[in-house]
Length: 116
Image 1: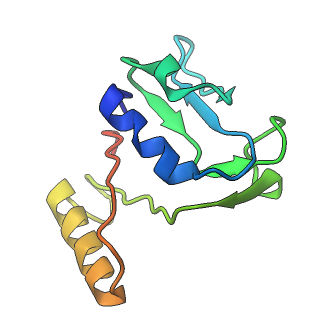
Image 2: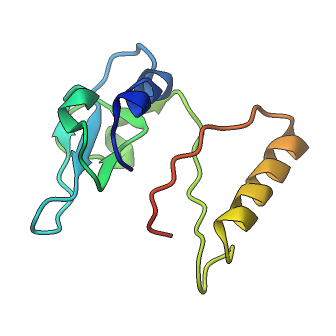
C-alpha cells in the first residue's frame, strides 16, 4: 500500500470512532514490519510498503487476536499469482464481485498490496 492524501480518507472508514490503539507501519530498511502505534496516517504520506491493521487493540503490546478489541470492517486477503488461488488480479476481483453479489453486500474498497 502506498499512503497518499487520497488513501488517508480510507482509515476513518476502517477504524470508526471507537476507542483503541491503531497500528500502522512500513517496511523498514532491514525488512522488518514494526508497527507505529496511534500515528496519524499522514505521518506515512508518500511511503511505500506501508501496512495497517484493520482491528483496534487494547494495548500497544502486540497485534495478536487476544489483544484485539474489535473491528468496524470485514476484510479478506485474496492471493493472486502463480500457484495462488487466482492466476490474475482480474480473476480475483471477479470472484470478489461474485461473492458480494451472492451475499448481497456492498462492493468493497480494494487495497492492492502489489505482493500477490
